[in-house]
Image 1 (tube, rainbow, N blue to C red):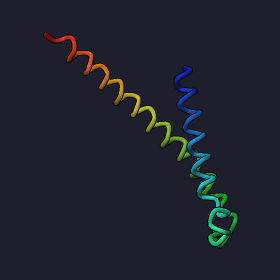
Image 2 (tube, one colour):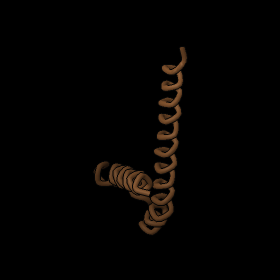
Image 3 (cartoon, rainbow, N blue to C red):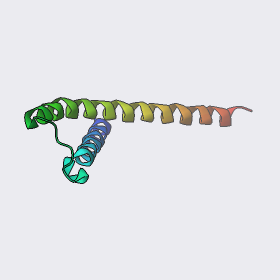
Image 4 (cartoon, rainbow, N blue to C red):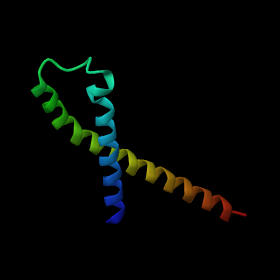
Length: 79
């Protein structure tokens, strides 16, 4: 259970970092959508999707490394 909490926390942190990097302040406010409401709706739908994508990526990366570790252990055990 704690591993999922760590993965979820990392996913939220990565999504917040992505959101902050896309903030118009970093582009000298040159880009704003036509409607601020549209931007907030886009954020409200995109942020949970970003959390899910990061969560799945971290979990699959962990599985990949786990399989690699088991494969390396099996190779060491063979004569």
